[in-house]
Length: 85
Image (cartoon, rainbow, N blue to C red; front, side, top):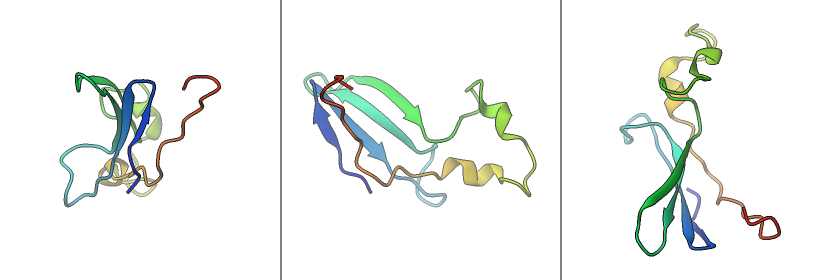
């Protein structure tokens, strides 16, 4: 739902996802505006490869595993021009 933001030669793109339309977890990615190369990706919830994944626990009554993938970034990414972030 969030719009992409261009800053300092990169475009940050929020990836809106849902359990019925997205193959992977929701994320925010940045790409080089000239080459299109992905610069970084941040997942809105930890993936199994993330060291913090285990801290979320396995109790499906508390937080079902399937729901962990569907945390869409609904807002346009913020830019801090003073700090260059």
